[in-house]
Image (cartoon, rainbow, N blue to C red):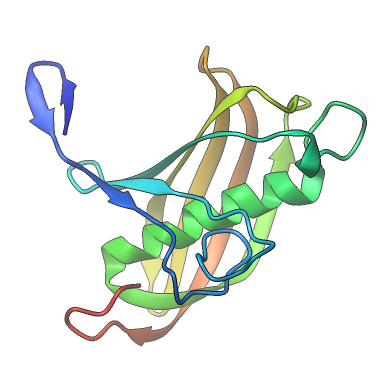
Length: 153
């Protein structure tokens, strides 16, 4: 649990699923990133805290643009959990606002902004420890099926 403004907020940890082969968040991909997130049910947000090393760099000392897009896609994809739906990315746009250095503490956060039928619209941000927004993403996710009770999305 996490304390915030005198109230207790429960943050559910979303560990990599050992049977999921996803490169970003899966636990069974030997070359994957195995990203762990937290789910804030009260505020309906997904949050990740990461420090990525030189393995993920593009230009010398900076994260590769594709990795930045992957982080935003992953955090926004996890937001689908709040809709109790299995959905896939249909569109993803990324604003690269500032170069992101490797080996710095990053906070990635995503939430839903709208739902229209089977289309879920999410936004995500990558910030540094000081709270400066380094990259921003928007995504449209299409629901394949509503999740079955008890099934992980």
